[in-house]
Amino acid sequence: MQLRYSFRLYPTAGQRTALARAFGCARVVYNDALRARERARSEGRPFPKTGDLSKTLITEAKQTPERAWLGEVSAVVLQQSLRDLDAAYKNFFDALKGKRPRMGAPRYKSRKDTRQAVRFTANAAWRITVGGKLRLPKIGDVPVRWSRALPSTPSTVTVVKDAAGRYFASFVIETDASQVLRETTFEVGIDLGLSHFAILSDGTKINSPRFLRRAEKKLKREQQRLSRKVKGSSNRAKARVKVARAHARVADARREFHHQLSTKLIRENQAVAVEDLAVKGLARTRLAKSVHDAGWSAFVSMLEYKAARYGRTFVKIGRFEPTSQVCSRCGVKDGPKPLNAREWTCGACGTVLDRDINAAVNVAKAAGLAATACGAQVRRAPVPAQRSEAGTHPKQPTRLVREQAGIPGPEAREDVNTRPVTTPATTAR
Image (cartoon, rainbow, N blue to C red; front, top):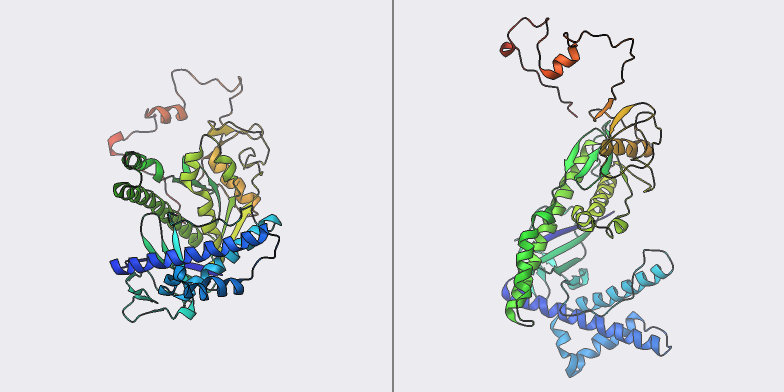
């Protein structure tokens, strides 16, 4: 499998200028190649091959006064820009054939795009220096903040500049499932929600952090300041970066939460089951902002690749499985429930079910896991007694009524204040 490792770069002022030059040259070559192919399509001619485009738009263009500045950057960056165009066309044609999700045709790149990227392969002779810096051709030794060690030597590196003006070095590394974790007997079903981000089949409820909701006040203030700036001015460019940084902090916090929770679930459970949610459909409702703030798709993707990496089992059940309508105790389908019904009583067995925990247990069962409601809020509903059995004296409350009201019974002779305080034991996983 392929894993991507991303590290923060801190280029100097001169290196930022060199990177901007590389971004611009790669963008120009990409647009020239796209223009040449679109012209050939409109004229009914076959698409120019990548080799012909490389010779015309890079090698020969460097000899002309209009494109002489292409020689100021590494030729590998320009070649990889043509490879990116090939990949864009391939994805577009595969989408037309139904081999991948629908996507549009390649579009021209702009210097105002919020994301700029260039890629260096092994032919560019880039390397990691002894001092831990990233040596890039015609750019220099760029300082890197290494947060972890690379499992193997990468062959390519992609330098990315995001909307917030931050620089990253991205490495794609081939690896295998060599870090298989020790087997465990625990299996869990997960029901994703909004009030609680995740509800586990063992009764655990994980609150939703709501990173976007918590940062809305600051985002609103920065967006208002941006709207007051004159278009095209330097102050507007600075305000735009501040808005982008505020959004980046929200995205980073959400991604960190997803990584920590997914890693914890994968390490503690041998099998994990989730429901295939229709996120695009939910994003068209009035809950769109909350749905996007939760980031369910990214979380499920993390669970999937981490399960494959660490030797765990990952199961995704169908989105039309009636997990919220079936009683997890007896299996009887009781029909759809409104969203405000957080608890419901099964009409067949009389069990009082927590809506979310019941759905998580059903997710695990639908996935074929040995799911139990251990620790879950599942209890028998009180059954009214028959008239012949309801003969308790009104002045002598039953033991159940005394316990609920806090009234000491005749069997309690010692002082109430001297009784030991007992708390329910928690089950250690």
